[in-house]
Length: 310
Length: 139
Ligand SMILES: [Zn+2]
Ligand SMILES: [Zn+2]
Image 1 (cartoon, rainbow over the protein chains, first blue to last red):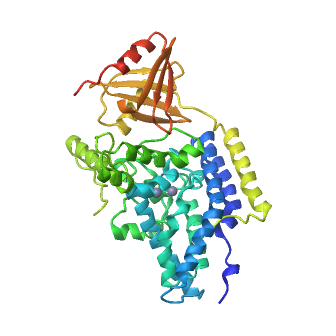
Image 2 (cartoon, each protein chain N blue to C red):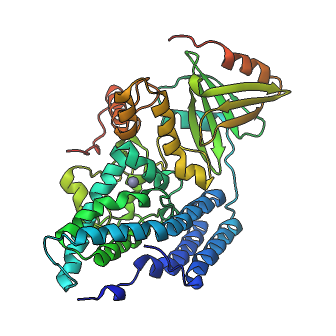
Image 3 (cartoon, rainbow over the protein chains, first blue to last red):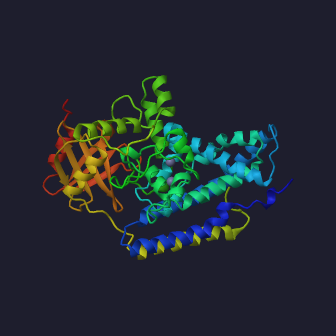
């Protein structure tokens, strides 16, 4: 049962397609007179992607060793049968969902993930704006898959498939897809919501490949035509320097922890919800949404698209 | 996951891709900057800082940065980053230094992402510097 060397690296295989599709989107956007791409923003996203690939060479090796270590204690041997590929598709996607949700709700994880959200643009190059620091530790959340009995090479392969799948959904050139697709799959529309800072959209649609997890765990919200997505983060960074993009939240955590009054505050600054503070200087996404709802209720009828968490 | 470090071609593909993409963005007019005006400042403030009630707004001569004063002595910066516009509540504890050099108002903050601002405000730089340095009024 050693099919491992034959499992290709989906990301490496997809790179030429990434390039062609980005070039195509630039052309389509130009035809439609849409300002989809800006030079420095694109350069920053591509630099983040390249850095992520380079760091992935080293961090990936550590992750692979760890997966193999845990795999020695596996509860079952699932191997490479065809149904293993089906099982890992769902098991990895569920793992990704919770990894992604944690990455938005716990500041330590957010510090690594925020890079991906720091562009105020939303195009295929945004998909390549990947973390530089997450690869150092985020693989721990995939270890249970090895413990269950999925071969490490299969887990790594499926992680690659997920990354490749998530590339094409970073676009505004595709509107809504047929109902059944939007019901089951993560789509450009669902992921636009995920990248938007409009209060109704904050911290929603964590899906990787299947949107079903968001529907199941109450984090789904549909894109509302009357509330066009504004992309970026709550406090946009205004920088195109890859090092600042990669490290800014880590620096902010260090600044907060240094200035904190006691250990409870230090812990909350490190592991609490992003935006949590003790001087009213910023808000969490929950607080932003609550304030937005209160304003909406004060001004007019409640927003009927707000169905998150229900 | 990643590329095979022993295979130089695998590194070459993304590098050539990056060059092609940046050239395409450049050729399609991608090198541009937002020009800030009063309406844009107000619109972006209402989106990002809905509780900030701007009492006064000054826009620098390059239309790249605006400084807004709130009703209770608070301030916000609105600035162009490429073709997008960034809003920043100017926290007093973040304020490191305010300097006037001729018509130029320089604001240094401790923000790691984008910390330094220079606004060309002919005839108004010194007055705005004084306002920034004034003690905060409690609302
Ligand atoms: Zn995310
Ligand atoms: Zn994304």
